Image 1 (cartoon, rainbow, N blue to C red):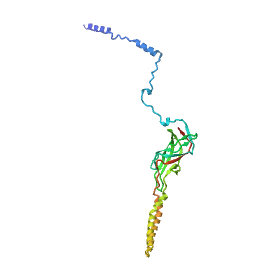
Image 2 (tube, rainbow, N blue to C red; image 1 turned 120 degrees about the vertical axis):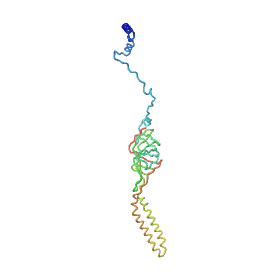
Image 3 (cartoon, helix red, strand yellow; image 1 turned 180 degrees about the horizontal axis):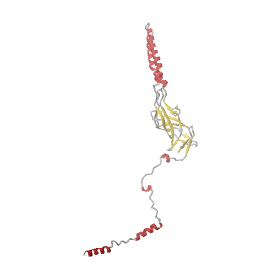
Image 4 (cartoon, rainbow, N blue to C red; image 1 turned 60 degrees about the vertical axis):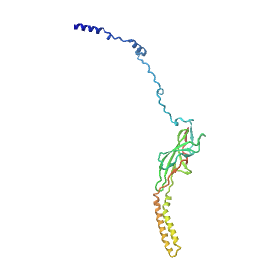
Length: 266
């Protein structure tokens, strides 16, 4: 009985269609035809759309100084040309090195080809050194360099020196506070002057009175002695006094001189 059952199962397995697998070669042949596999040639990859077509990322725009040059020309300015400027902010010896200062031109300047860089053009500078008033009567200091001009939105470098601030001459572009040593010496002598004057007044009041007028020599001698001591000490005391500070209000007039031939773009 077991043999009959085993034989039946074996016949069922052999006759089933599960193991009778047939491959559809039509798809394979179509792929070979389209892609030319036999020739080892593959079709080109499809092109991708440009990044600007697939993303909404905005493009970086150049700064105005890069794109705004309406004439595309370069204008030359002779060395020695003077320009009057008006400061747009206050300047003082409290400001630190590196502080930026802006100006507007008061007058236009003529270029070598006859063009005019108009009044109202922006100039910029920077404080290159500064210090507060110091002892020995030394005044404060602001050293200022004006080296940029902005014409039609385009920045150009220039070499200049400051020669005048509010109608006062400036040397080497250094704006200095007043040196006050001699003035401080005079101030240090003030107590001696006051004491001597008071003694002289008192002695003058005693002089018309008989006998008592002999005592007038005492206050005048004491006042003179105090004044002499004060006169001797004053030069030493003045060493420890400071000079004047630098304080230039906004709207002050500066006159600069271009020291090298300048090329202005714009």
